[in-house]
Amino acid sequence: MTLANGTVLTGLGVGLNSAVGTVLRVAAHATLPAWSKTNNDATAEADTLRVAIASVAADLDRLGVKAGGTSAEIFEALKMLLEDDELFEVAGENLADGWSAAAAFGMAVDTFAELLGGDAAFEERVADLQDLSKRVQAHIAGVSMTLELPETGTIVLVGDDFSPADTAQFTPAVIGVITIKGGPTSHTSIICRSRSIPAVVSVTEASALATGDEVLVDPVGDRVVVGGNVSLATQAIQFVAVSDEPIIDVRSNIGTLSDAQAAAKTGANGVGLFRTELLYLSEKTQPSVEQQTTSYSAILAAAPAGPIVVRTIDAGSDKPVPFLNMGQEENPSLGVRGYRLIHEHRSFIEDQLKSLEAARQATGREVWVMAPMIATVQEAQDFCDLARSIGKFKVGIMVETPSISVLVSDLKGIVDFVSIGTNDLSQYLFAADRMNPALGTLLTPWQPGLIRTLARIADAGRAAGISVGVCGESASDPTFAVVLAGLGISSVSASPSQVDVVRTALSSVDVAKAKNVANRVLEATSPETAKAAALSALAE
Amino acid sequence: MAFKATVTVNDPIGLHARPAGQIVKAVKESGFDVQLVNANGDSTSAASALRMMAMKAKTGETLEVLIEGAEDASAAALVAQIQEFLQG
Image 1 (cartoon, rainbow over the protein chains, first blue to last red):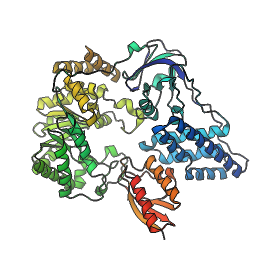
Image 2: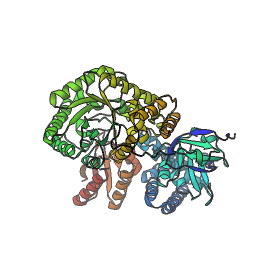
Image 3: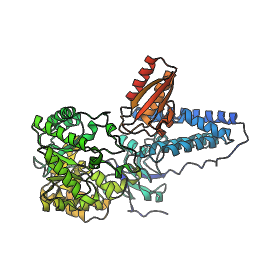
Image 4: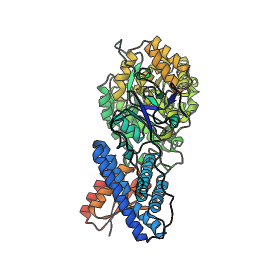
């Protein structure tokens, strides 16, 4: 099947530049022989396996030297997995059961893949392991695993996903990359970003591309255009400030003293999210109120001028605080976390608020406090009562559960403000685990389901006289920040490195223009059209 | 008599591939037999990165380190090194 010129395939873009080139479809590697038992002596098979492992290790060394720099470390790490003592031990047991060298190794890798499974942190290591397993088996079977790419030309490589050993074989002719699987944090994405190779990943329909097709790789547009030329490439918007002050406040996200110091060097108007859990994650025993006051005072004093919005502890069983003795949970992100800790650990949260009040008095700073993981109006009421009984704070809550997002108007008279955590709100709204790289497309802030939810929260907040801020990752994207301002969000909070870019974007438009951009985005029914609508409205 | 000490996983992503690799390297260089024991009592060889990763030790978890065949001073130095790798 050939795709018609002009066909648009969507995915997730990596990089800011586009590229036009000829597709080279990388087929899955040659099939390996099925696993079988052998009549050979187990010792002889063990020798065969040893030789194959040593040879693959030598390949990795060579690739590491060729790749150089940080990529060399990746090969060092792969070699360590390959040469793991226990992996060989388990393979040895399979050999003793009569399996051939290739089968014994493949099965041993499967055993460890199983042991490491179910944990998102190891997902890519498991993929690495399986890749090594195939290499060892290919060596034993005499099958070639090299990509054999030309040195010259303008190639856009298209494949399922590329392993470290594959990307190390990229030649200068590779000017673009498209993968069918893999997310924005996959190995392919990381390598393409570091080498400035335009890439679009997670392009499900890319399997229809054939060698010889001319394509435009358009990362900014999160798309691939068949037969497209450079003039179709989505341009990254260049914002030019036209006023000194942004149309809404731009604050900074911080977690530590050094973050506070970095934020103070930016144009941030205060802190929109101070993540307090980082102060506790490495403590074995609960720090005293005096110790906490000292830490908080130092950070409050260093923070950029303006209000400082402090989030009370946001820990859970996946991010446990040692002294709170959190048990294991089946679904930590849906478990006892954030404000839900109040039932078991009320005194800890009270101490945290007491320390913040003492630090507020010591530094004379304006401190706002908010609780994470609030799901009901009652929880909001309880937290606000507690916080007001302890200190002179402005008091609010995070909006990150779908349940509270529809109850914002009922918070009138209870909270002074709310702050939307778009990362968690997306995860809960789309029922899509943030840790799972395969679900990246559901978690882009450009999803209409998220944007319309944000609009409703902003409207409800305005009607109830509650200020609504956004402190998620999405506020660090300058284009999206303009959309947020247009939706009626009253402040955004970005990571220190993004504060000034976001400020510039929000100083380049007036309120009417931001509203126009937001209205156009609200009409979209897909993330691609939402983003395109924002870019085109901004360009007008 | 084995040398015993406790280390804490402070790395925000838990005991993942990088610290496991660093530990294997240090353990192999030391030539000692080193076992890590988690709160459930499961014992794992610190000479295998894969076994250590399969423990799925999370941030904040404490592990007991058992070292055979070492003088106390060199065992303690190795424990300090392991703790350093677990800082993240």
